[in-house]
Length: 186
Image 1 (cartoon, rainbow, N blue to C red):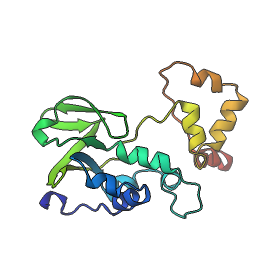
Image 2: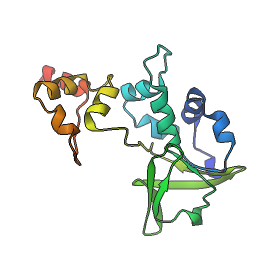
Image 3: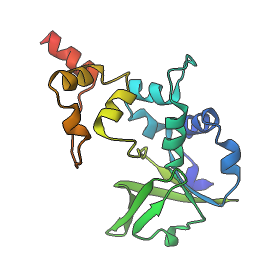
């Protein structure tokens, strides 16, 4: 467990409980890409609250939380030497892509940290949260009502919703409501 020294996983542990995944993860074998608390700190607070429902008022999305968490889990016992470049199906049914550049391994572009062997698989320290594709652009914007209400209203007003649900791919740099709020200040 020395590879876990200096890393805090309090946030992840709490979310696993909130999502009802404790018993599931006791099974296995599994390979878990475990985000540290620092990784969760990189997520915008309103979006994190929407996923995890801190205050218990029912505005969180339990299915989304379970999907995000199980997107970090592979069925099987993958030692470091077994993680070779390629695509891997997660417990969520999503896909993670492992790459290797100059001897460093990455999962979906995020560096894979130290490996710790557990009794039922491997845990890899991650300094990033891996986010699965959860739908098309309008679905994502309307799912995170905490963050994108202004963007959604503008997309509707500009009659762009149908265009963004059409076959893509599209890349959208989506400003959060707080960013639109700063326009009023300028």
